[in-house]
Image 1: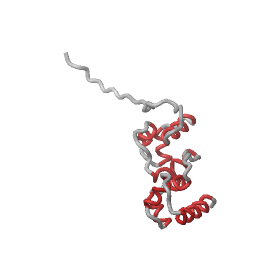
Image 2: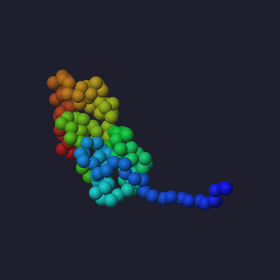
Image 3: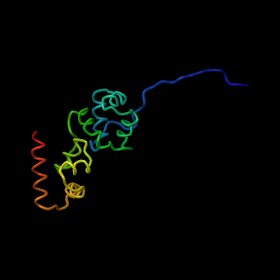
Length: 141
């Protein structure tokens, strides 16, 4: 007895494997919360943020963290910054999609200086004053 020639195609939306986030910890949690609140599909969010649907799935399931260069687009989509860093320098850098290398070049300091500041390590006072001055005025522009 052979099988019947039958062509069946099933079509359905991808299920969200993670429910509504209980805590907003990762970028994926924030994205998923807004997406569910506004009844938006992962595909629609992907188009807004200009990434693939698989990228959104990866962020929402915490399999991947967004690259720094995507953070400004995510903030634009969310309409707020989910960053709660105490460190203004790190917040400034990430919200603008800058790597440590790019920010160090902009501020004309070594990358280790940026990393030390972001990690709460001591930095020469004159260097810290220069960076604080630049960041302070950058935040208020």
